[in-house]
Amino acid sequence: MSDTAKKILVVDDEPHILDLLHFLLTDEGYLVTAADTGETAIELAGHEDFDLVILDLALPGIDGFSVCRRLQNQNIPVLMLSSYDEDDYVVSGLETGALDYVRKPFNHRELILRVANLVDRNTSLKTPKTLISEDVRINLDTEEVICRGRVIRLTPTEYLLLKLLMSRQGMVLSSEDILHEVWDADEWDGYRQMVKVNIQRLRNKIEKYPRNPVMIVNQWGRGYRFVPTVTVS
Image (cartoon, rainbow, N blue to C red; front, side, top):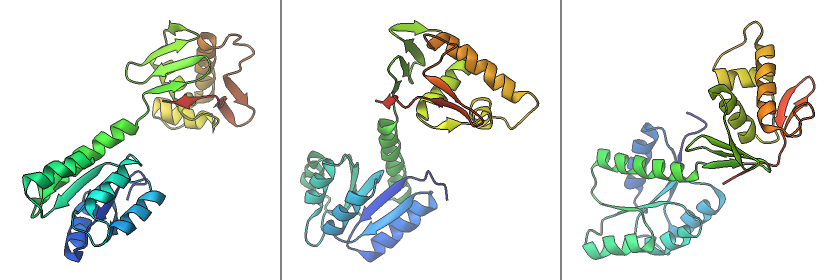
């Protein structure tokens, strides 16, 4: 299973529902954690960064409405899954903060599609929109690069190189790492010089003093590093 698999917390006091959801969701590639009480769900959510919570309303102890309110403080998206099919319950669930409400019994494929939509939405919200350093800002939506208050023009390769370095703030990237990430290639003759040339071209456009760079620096014998003043917004 992929290390980047999305994590879903399923909260229900019916074992057969937990088993069914575990089967359906893991078959789609999700990492699934189960809880059969509201208290357990809140505890798990406090220690794990879930991409979605599928939440029953009729739970022993703390009910689903109360759990949903607690999860809102952690900005965890919630899909309510309940046998309560009256409109008042649906409205109350959405007012409490749930992003979707599915009635039991449910269509398996429909539930999977709703889950995928919510996970994609949450991933989109988590995805950085801007990379910022003291002197350079990248708008990841428009690919606009602003350096010390003015827009600068980069080649597609220079843009990918700058984006890579800024997104890995403080990390040393070898020429092999850069080749793989920017050119999507393995080693070939002369690749170190190609990386070096593009680094220098990028420095010429963003550094105040390209021959004495302070943003893109060499780590001798290891590679290149963008100084760790970058933040993400």
